[in-house]
Image 1 (cartoon, rainbow, N blue to C red):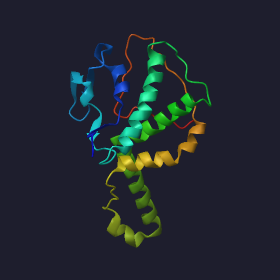
Image 2: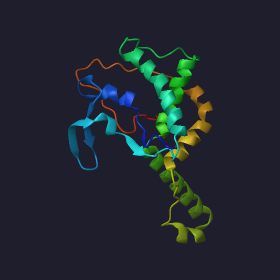
Image 3: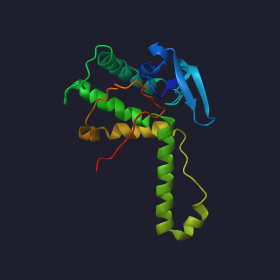
Image 4: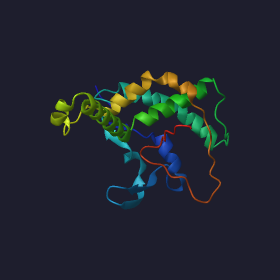
Length: 191
């Protein structure tokens, strides 16, 4: 039996750090699609989709368990002012990197990006190696029932790549607050 319909792709503990007056109830929200700013949008109804990770609670529950542990680390970093990441090779550091990896691939934007990349790659290969087939496929597209779940499961299979990640903390000492988005992980390739 499904108990959790709303699957938040941005954890609420994370969004609370960006809430109005740091109270954890409302966010200032700018909607890019309609160009509107909402000064006090209810935090609990942001960054979720119904059954984003499937019709059962298995993946949602696993993510929630990880979020609970990471939320405790965030508390110590922000409330206790322990402004350093966990030491490398500790379970805390491994958990933080895993959380960031999963966060990068659990958003609707990441699902859309994956499908766009797959379609572009397929069209390039077909155009190059099967030009006669290209004419009938050029306006078609690959479609996946749940591209977010596809991306999330694929990220799990590539967890071994986490060994190449490092962690840095940014401390905002300015009068302007940080902002976040519905896709808060930025993947940057080092030169």
